[in-house]
Length: 372
Image (tube, rainbow, N blue to C red):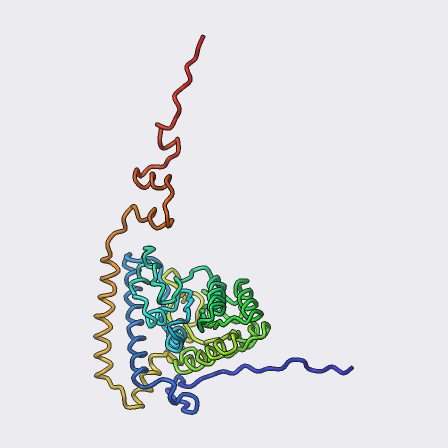
């Protein structure tokens, strides 16, 4: 028998508003109303200011290590804008824009990086999981949450975010395989920012796109300009429609770039070419949105200056709330560990000493009398 092809496919790259503010009306017309576009731009400006202040907090010793979001705000923000409040957002650690848009108080993120666990105490109604530091583990959580939504029939889905480096983790492949084989409504959003700390994407994946990694699991795959808010909104809406109507997962590769270091503990100048960074600075999502709004006649320098003043004041208040939070009580460690605290831990809490013999000499039995 002759050899015959058994599988052929293609992966689309979606771009609507490019780095020169050229707008493809055939794809983008009516996608984001002008008033919403202004709100999204203002929100991104606030997130940039938040990044700048967070960096200064770390450098001045007032906060621990912090990962800047600068340059890659669009993937999470576009997803949060396109999805509904019944859908889960399952982040890694560079999704401030989307989390804040959903309603997470920004001071929660500051508290997390300050080492205060109250930053991870998130209102369940927001349907946001705490940020995940281990690489890739959150994709399994998203799959489970989406499976629960499917089981309940509540029409919800889960959208999880991760970097290009995470696609080399076993958890990624397990989550992809599980969700595709069991028809689970998950959106896998890979934020390909070119670097997994100091490892370039070309070492993570030798294929032309990371998006095609989803093909092996039989799911729909698409690549988009991750610095184009219109493109992100479109591909997420398409994926959400597929998830709700067919219970099928989608793999989205959002091509973006982190303009800052991996974290404040990193110095990207040691491994990144300055010309590369400069080129991506010209593709900044804020710059292209601003140019587009100017072209539409809905934006000018006066409004931009006013926004700048507003966000500076807003982030100052956020910082004040985070640093001004009351100190935790010693009892909190015990009171939030169990629904009903066991007696031995209640004793430790009330006496601030353990119940072991070594810490409580009164528990040592009296010596047995010796008889001659």
